[in-house]
Length: 117
Image 1 (cartoon, helix red, strand yellow):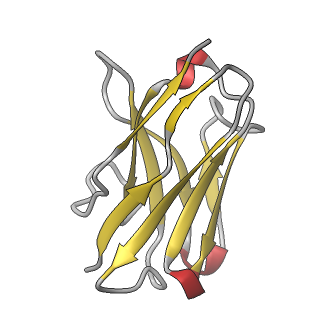
Image 2: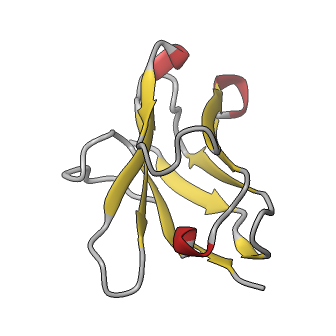
């Protein structure tokens, strides 16, 4: 299974935008659903988004619906999480995973997103 390498993230003001990327290294994402999760300080990791293989379906958690979108570029072996209208409560470490279940065994390294003025 491909290694998942994340990029993006950082510090942004409330109302700002960021795009996270989850790229496959040494393999392909073509046949896999990809999940996005986040873990805020002192909280458990939670699922926030999922995209099925070939973009054939997916979901967004209510907490991010209308602000976040998930997309994939299989030619580039990359899945994106585009985050708009960010709020302080979105501050967390964000992870992608090789499936949409918290029981996934293949995880990206995580990337910090901090929303603060």
